[in-house]
Each structure stands twice: as structure tokens, then as C-alpha cells.
Amino acid sequence: MRDRPAFLPPGTPTDQAWIESLIGTIKIDRSFVMSAPKAPQDAKLIAGLTSMAHELSLRVIAEGVETGAHVELLRAAGCDELQGYHYSRPVTASRFIDLLEKYGAQYDVA
Image 1 (tube, rainbow, N blue to C red):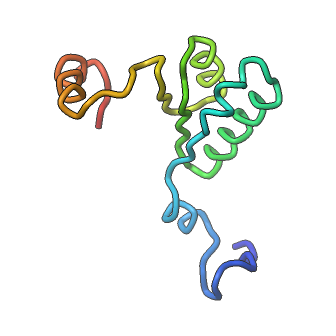
Image 2: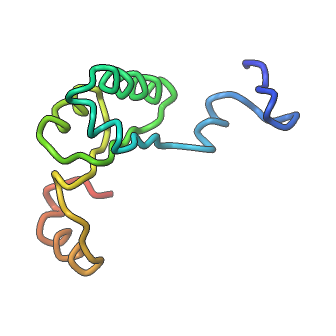
């Protein structure tokens, strides 16, 4: 086991189980997603964050997906889930239920 970081209280484990108990998902902010197709450093950052998260058995969600270029870049980087206007504008809960009933069988929504 690695040394305990100084900011953690004594006795706090720093292994994989501890990390997974705190977080299970990393979310990539839309500001990186929006600029990534034209900013190679942001695209590399997304790929690096995704790789690091997967090494820690964490899932990666990218928000702010608005174009096909975003989808292509984020899928290539290995993001597990994408969310944004490319897929749907915000909807009410009742509209979401309607959409889920109509299209839910096509997707794993568990």
C-alpha cells in the first residue's frame, strides 16, 4: 500500500477500495469537451484523464457533447458515457418517462 497522503487522517486507507468507496465516476467538464476538437492539448487531457480513470476502475462521463466531432473524439478517447444536446435538450420528468418507454428497450438503461 502506498504512503497515506498528508491531508488524510491517520488510519485512512489509500488503496483501490478506498478510491472506489469515494468515487465511481469521473465527469469531464463541458469546457474541455467544447474546445477539444480544435485544441489538441484539451483532447490529450481528455484521453489522459480517461486512461487514468480506467486504470483506477472508474467510469468516465463527458458532458457538453453537442456535435458529431465531440462524439467521435470522446469515443476514441474511451469515454464510457456522453451527455449533451447532441442527444437531447433537457426534458421534464414526464417527457423523460415517455422517451424511456418509447426508446428504452433499445438501450441498456439499468
